[in-house]
Amino acid sequence: DALEICKRGESGFALLVVDLNNFHRINSRFGDVGGDDVLRSVAQVLRQSVRIEDVVARIGGDKFGILILGDELQSVAGGIATRIKTALRRPYRLNDEEIFISATIGVVIGQSSYARAGEVLRDADSALDEGKRLGGDRVLVFQPAMHHAPAARLGRERDIRLAMERGEFSLHFQPMLGAPNGDVTAFEALLRWQHPTEGLLGPSHFLDVLRETGLIIPVGRRVIRDACTAAARWQQEGRARVSVSVNVATSQLAYQGFVADVEQALFESGLEPASLMLEVTEEALVGDADSTRAVLQRLRAGGVRVFVDDFGTGYSSLSHLRELPVHGVKIDRGFLDGIHLPGAQREIVRTIVRLAHLLNLDVVAEGVETEAQMDVIRDLQCDVAQGFWIARPLDPDAAEAFLRDRRAAIEIA
Image 1 (tube, helix red, strand yellow):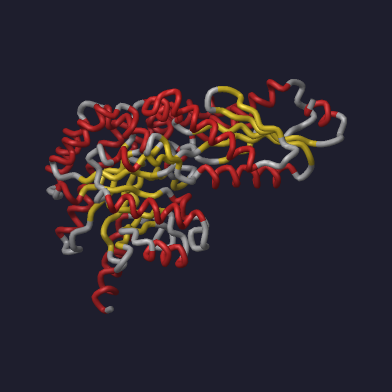
Image 2: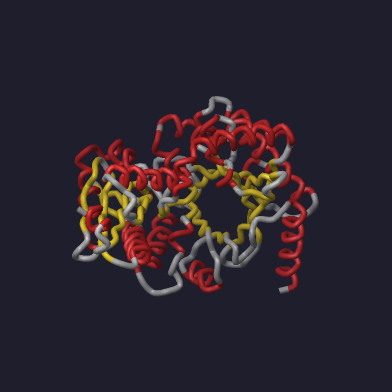
């Protein structure tokens, strides 16, 4: 019916396909009954986020569709998607545990060229898949170029293999400051690709290919080794005890030689294990919990610290983290949107910080982009802050200069 209305020029339409991130983890932990409870709560959020004339339906599993008719569809669809993502960020109570869920949303703005409803759903799913490929927890509007994504990825894989041979990958470092005093506590090591024609590229241009091909194992090994070497050099040059933080993919944790790789990097660099922080995803923590726990316990026994990255973007439960040998959480940057204003966002962060501290976990707030946000996370007693307001990722020389200047400023103060 929407296609016919669009063809007659009476109105346009937009379709939003909402897919919950890592929902199967909830079913695995709480069973089908618990999963159904969450789906009912999500359905209520969707109904409350749309206009009375919009249609909400469950397409299947944990996927929902929202049909919008009218004008100014880009603006209307964007507003609805924003309301959905904001509402889903609130904590949910399930079996006396507090969990967090998020969603990826694919959007199609209707065109008269569509002949069948199946084509609209196909394009919405293409946008959804691209959003998940980019890390999930985002809204993406369909573009025709998305149909060519598989072929483009094959070309990118070839280029990445050549880049590894040519040594085009390197590390940049983003400072992490102690929120109370502004002292540099650590740098997060971030992989960058100096492409010969495209310039300096971030992980969105290569990380998915590294994961899909298994190249994440040798590249990840190199990242940990180089990060440990850099941190050891800072400490040897009298830059005080500054840690280095490295992101670890799920497949790296599943690799049998991962712990040995970490131990070898620490041994070769001479870095103290406590100065290495490994950031793992929520998916890695709840995917194969027994295997992950064994790996993390070995790392912890060796003195390495482990943090949960992007906390709150997928399936999460602070009480579940109590069962795992982790040292802290990094609150996802999305929670800082609007945190400087009184309201739900600030209270959600306050709750996460309070519960994490009760579990003796440190809290890092990432994505700090304004002084107002920095003031709030100090007030909420976050332990560490990270974000563009402090500094963007820096090349090794600039990172050393930042560390030197920051130390000097604190000594003068």
